[in-house]
Length: 316
Image 1 (cartoon, rainbow, N blue to C red):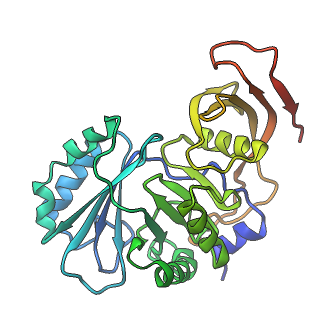
Image 2: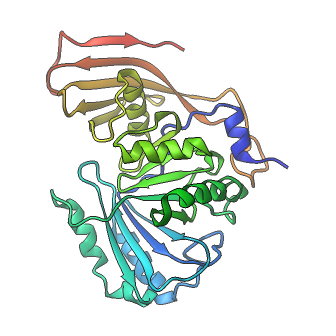
Image 3: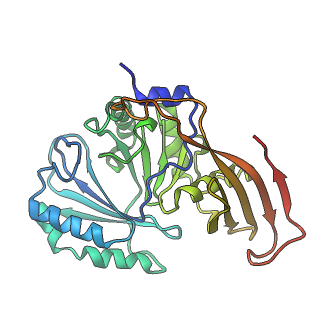
């Protein structure tokens, strides 16, 4: 017997660039066992499932998760909409008397609000831990342990969730409203993730990425933060990303406070190690890893060339 999360940790697999991508997350409380496909196999009424699926198909970057705090039903059914945009992300919280009440909400209108400059009244942060053992046994083995630890300390802001992606990174923790993904979040690491987030910082060593960015932008953000040592949550804004060739990319971020433009060039290479990537895998595979080739910082605007850029080359 093996656990894919153990294999990943033992291989020292890089976590960055692996976060799930989504700008609007619908989180529905469902205190029941979850099947392999959480919503499809749930006891949520079929017409409510149809409504949710229709909204998800129409929403660019829309994602759905089931959540729970154990199996005991509460007085209300909690439903959250987390808009994980780069600037001023927010959470809306609804208490439903029945699942059918979802059909009375203007979900499309809630999504349209995400384009507004100022967020509506927002709810406190949420911390999700994937415990979906029906998807992968690592999510149950490690996720449940992390959920119980965080829930005992933080209470109702911590939720179990259905599969968030990245079986081999269990325990997986997601911090909303920013949509920050963290992996291999066990014991003290999980507490550090939450503590740093509450203080407006990112725990970089367990960071998988931010859900409003593409996977390549996530890699770029990680490298830039590593180079400049800036862990402040809202200190950077994505400028652009560019594929230089099939295996190389360039990503640029601007630092809000200093007005500097940070540029990284990096290359994808396949890992030397081979592992089962999930606990259901019957074959071993290599995984994509990234190497920093060059970092530069410019004091001028992104549209201008600079003679003042400081450039550092990396070789691997």
